[in-house]
Image (cartoon, rainbow, N blue to C red; front, side, top):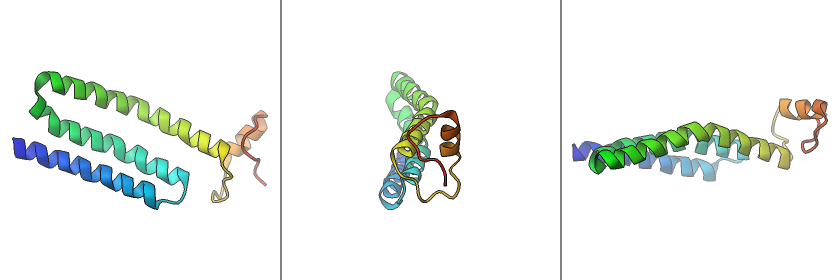
Length: 115
């Protein structure tokens, strides 16, 4: 049982390391946030699933609460980060920028309207 738990935890660590490589290799903030946002919950769930049998009931409960909180809050945080990046950076690599057009129609400032 211990070997299986350690294998699952190593798999989670590998996924987290690959996400770190993605953060360094990707060129746009959007791709970086995508890499971190997709891999983080998977890595945490794998590490939690591996560590839970080794920690007992109380430790497993703490891990379940932490994993649940991350799964619930991560999509919201990623969305807010992406909107903040969109509003603060000049986005030249997007073919179609629907958010800028919507914000321009709504009268908000921050993102340049599409040409």
